[in-house]
Every structure is written in structure tokens, then in C-alpha cells.
Figure 1 (cartoon, rainbow, N blue to C red):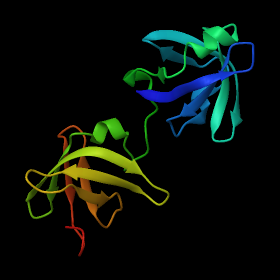
Figure 2 (figure 1 turned 45 degrees about the horizontal axis):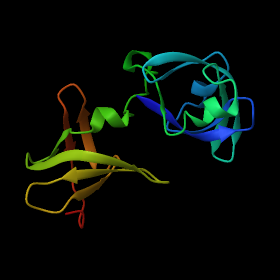
Figure 3 (figure 1 turned 90 degrees about the vertical axis):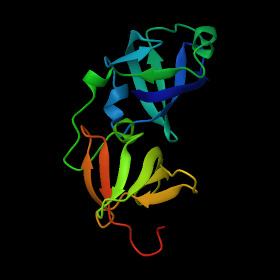
Length: 160
């Protein structure tokens, strides 16, 4: 599971700029273990910086080494993920999930999750038709069965 992407070097001592892709900022706290190219690395220090983080990893000791990490993903194994509250889901749990109406009509499969200010939006890929945008709100999403890979929705007027 991706928790951030290294966007470049910062300073001369091996710090990197990280664009987070997680709702849990503690992933970047000192002594946290992350994975880079499937290998464990330790966070030595970090601080927020204009929507991103400046992070010192034990895998880079100078600017050249830090710059070589540009574009790399910081990840965690699925087993290390925090349990989410009832009704909340990791995006990867929803991707490729089958979507049905509460009347049993198959709408398609979730191909993408868009994060917006108000709520997520599920992009449902439909056969022979344009994608359907389904807002992730309780009035629309009636049931999510992660194990069964099935979502049931009630389409409000105008959503088709």
C-alpha cells in the first residue's frame, strides 16, 4: 500500500520531500518503518512542509542519494495497515468491486476512487456506456461487502 511518493531532495544532508498518500500522518514519524523498493527503511526525522513532508530516511545520507530516490513510492505491507472505523474503506479494497443497484441491476466495476473535499466519488466503468460517477454518501451507497467484492447503491435522480 502506497503511503507517499518521494518528489525530490531537500537540502544537502539526504532529506527528501514526500507527497503523502495516507490519512495517517504518523506514518512519517521518527522511528516509523516504511518500505522503499520492498526493503524496510527507517524514518529518522520528519516535519510538515506546505502539504507535504520533509523526511530524513536512513537510506540517504547526502543530496545525491536523496535525489536518486525521486519518484519512488514509500509503502507499507497490507498486514501493517491500521484498521479503519466501520463504514470506511481503503481505496484498494474498493477497486474492481462490482456495483449493483438495490434492485439488483449490475452497473459495472469501480475503476477509480476520486477524493474530493466533500466526499469520495467512485468511478464505475460500464460496458458499452460512459463511466458512472457515484458519490460515496450514505444516501447512495447502501452496502459494501469487501470480502464479497460487491457494493449496493441507490441511484438518486440524475445520477445515471
